[in-house]
Length: 146
Image (cartoon, helix red, strand yellow):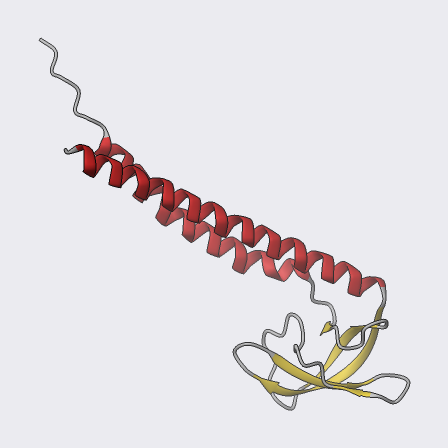
């Protein structure tokens, strides 16, 4: 195998491991951020009922009223909305200091572990064999012993 091919394989292997490392780092940051937001919300949580107004791929919107009579429709949607349907009435918890930060009652940051863990598992299940193959192919065949 030529020197150029060896270099290309080595750079490809390093790039794949670097890509996997960056994605893993971002996933861990996502989990930390989700956990911190959940802890902050739980420290000032106020429970109420809300109506599901809209369900879309990127967010689920709910409408609820706070004790001061204000009606809230958080523009960023609700946290942990899995399984909600338009028109459904659900129990929610919102942050008393920031009423637009809301989540479905009883759900928490632990729900992010499965999707993030699955992403990382499959990411490394692809990267490790490809890097192993690339590294194996770059090794020179050892001379035959007599």
